[in-house]
Amino acid sequence: MSLEHANFLHIAIVGIISVIILYTILSARGGKQLFIRRIPGLAAIDEAVGRATEMGRPMLFSTGLSSVDIYTLQALAIAQHVARLAARYGNRLIVPVVDPVVFAIAEQLVREAYASEGKAEAFHSEDVRFLSGEQFPYAAGVMGLINREQVASTFFFGYFYAESLLLAESGQEVGAIQIAGTPATTQIPFFLASCDYTIIGDEYWAASAYLTREPTLLGSLVGQDIGKALLLLMVVIGTATAVPGMPLHFVYGWLARWLFGG
Amino acid sequence: MRARQWAVIVVIYVVGGAVGALALWALTHGLEPLFTPARGTAFYLAVAAAVALWGFGTFLVHRLPATAKRRIIILATFAAGIFYPLEFYLPARSGIFFWRTSHTNPFSPMMLTVGNAVLVIYGFTFFLGAFSLSLVHAKNVAARRRGYYNSIAFFVAFIAMAVFGLWQNYAPADQMLFKHFLWIRSLTVQQVHGYLFNDMYVPLGATLFSVLAFYMATAAYRAFRVRSAEASFMMVAAFLVMLGQVPLGMWLTHNLPQAGWLSGLRMENIAAWILGVFSMAGLRAVAFGILVGGLAMSLRIWLNLERGAFFEQEL
Image 1 (tube, rainbow over the protein chains, first blue to last red):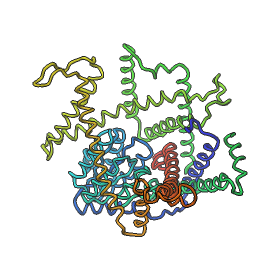
Image 2: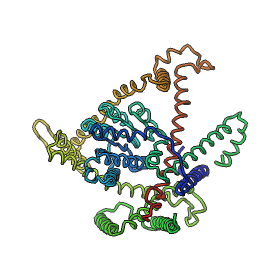
Image 3: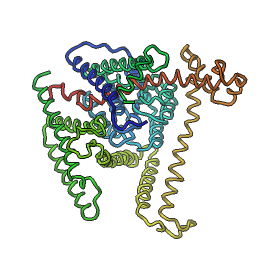
């Protein structure tokens, strides 16, 4: 059933979670100290950049197959961090992109990252390149780059489809250390099988907060966790009321009539 | 945060809301012709006016100081981002739309127009991508780098596909490209495009897709190597699911009854239970996390709470 306009429940859930997230962001900005646990995949980014530098081989960062959306923007935030590390260690970061809009943003971000480390001259504009707007031509282009450049580290962050395994296995073939993170649940198993580190689920969103430790992002992360706890509570209450025979089952009919007029 | 910054935030959002409301009013009060395709002289006039407006706007933006540019970005992001939430969260029909005789959501009819406008803006960036790609390959050819002949192949393919792709849209169906050329006889433009697209491009894509089957085998081999308790658990689960999908697995337990508690031990039911209960629960948990994270990210972008927008001293 498609939802053309939000119902009361939808507005209430999104509204409450949004208010919680905004509150935690503002309280974090106000100086509240927040803790974020260690995420091995993200901690390994430094190791991957260092290893590539020691080997004298470049790195590759793919931002996935989607256009400018929240998944790609998050991937670009991580790409900027990796580019900054690459500039600091004097290494090359190749960023092949599938979308011309993302190409413009990615080029600017990587250029800024090199400039912020005082290495503006080390940035080569052809290292950020548009390969193709199509899935398999893009995959073929990235596979070619991985093999020709013999990259030492690969980073796959963004929304991937069937090409995920093609890219990750190409990285395996050249012996690259591989770190991947995707919100595409169908592609997570492929990355798990082929990559050294895989960031799954909402760790993907935690990446920018983890890497920058910026209060706004940390506050947002805490708000997300409270939101998830709220949803978990709803699942428990829903199960307790919706299953016939459960003590609170009588509430279900009443709730359904009140919320949906059913 | 300083009081001045809060004041700026409020002013920006009020102005952003007003710009959005003005756009809404304009769209519903006679400006639809601006968003419908023009023909003939009107088309050329519209293109010239759009280019002039774009040039003037770009000139103005370039003249502005960095702070003003940042505020314009904030304003534009907020005004653009408010459209879809308003369309979705406001009801399809309600008394709150008192100024409309039908009392219907005023944003819904504009979905197509706004979608088209986004597509048009997106279309401009395609040239940027094509330029980047051509530049990289032109440098390869000019410097005679290793494998430069691949770059020449790129230009040949790019030009051929662009020419025949555009030409076949406008050429009459019976227009011959040539009547006799060596041993090839009477090819139409559509036929050449068909050879390039259906007989070369599509099979190449399918070939790459088929490589996936071999990569799956190598990835599965690595994933199922028993190295830890988790890997062993995954291997056993995967083995049961695979067995439940093939006739051999079903044959192994075909003597068990179709109904009753013993039916749960039939291989296809074990596979369905692992997929529908264990795997699905995990996937839904991941999906919940991703969606709530997406909401937080969208809020931060829409309200410009990301780095350097409101909370830095630049504003």
